[in-house]
Length: 477
Image 1 (cartoon, rainbow, N blue to C red):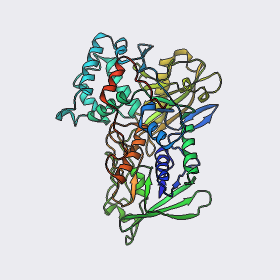
Image 2 (tube, rainbow, N blue to C red):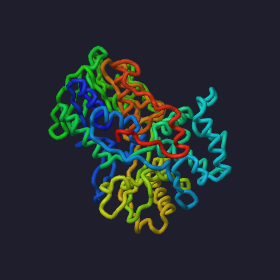
Image 3 (spheres, rainbow, N blue to C red):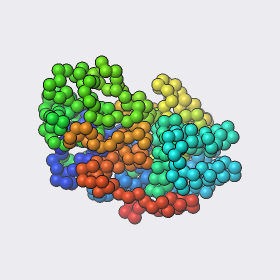
Image 4 (cartoon, rainbow, N blue to C red):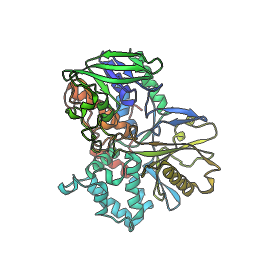
């Protein structure tokens, strides 16, 4: 079999099939594996390529469970608090949900309890199933009357999903929120995401995988509606070769995968592909072009974000969790991963990573908005004790999440033997790298039978532990 893309989904897929005794080739266009889940050393800091060195569900999540099943060495530092919140110019630490009363005040906290009960204790009503998150919120609370509470729901959505309130439906928020409480605290990977990617790379190479870095996939070949192989080209030499395989797993998203499907025999030119039935479905917002165009158009309503790495002379966040920002214009949240592993920052420094939703196409405007928020958060320390290390944005073909949360596609395509994994295939309620791991489980279920591999979710009762303290870590962590 051939795996296209050596990101997290591709590496996990390769490891799973190697464990089954399959021969596996992995094709990656970059000079390194990991995709959006790795990091580069810059000025002594581990600058992540996408993730913030964090697993959303920590040691209890599906990614950690898959790593344990595959025997991949790793260690995760779970958060010991629910979160902290920068509000009214100061940081408030909440070890439990009940301590949010100190963030919101009595009236807004009562509203929070009422909304939380509606989300977690009952299924969405028929009229709620088609509502966007913003429509649902606006019918229940006022941004002007309850600014901190409204900002709480908005910033969690921006940080966790990289989409606005208008771009995710309320039922998906319900499923995601339930999972966040059921699985427990997020966690930082020891050594950062690059260390974890490195262990996965070693596992697949030692397992016999043919890992071809700096190779472009030219086309996915098919015969009579079934995959027959992948044509690849070496970037350094330009040499092309056909890797024959009855199974191809694509980790590059449905849009890019559709472009790679070769023109079937008998079709005069790629310009005629638009008139053919399209075998690979696209998530909502990823539409095809007019009939005269040769390829699908670029994804439109995809998630996007801007991330800032900073180095600080002093510790800003005194815990291993997320600080949500309720009094900023753009920045939704900040993490300080060097709290878990000092090696992620240079000696004597602390690494901070902020994340915000991209609200426009002008990157310079977004960056200036980030700087304004950093001055709002850190005052005169910004630019002196706290310095920007890097700024990077994620959109287009490489966004934070490839498709809108809850609008994802299935692993199977209309071509026999061609399957999808990755961000655009994550099941409902699973976000970021947890969704990537679940997409691999979903692929295995597609091949072996429903719910053969996808584990059951933790019991609902476990979520109530957050009322007084975070759930304990997994015993194997």
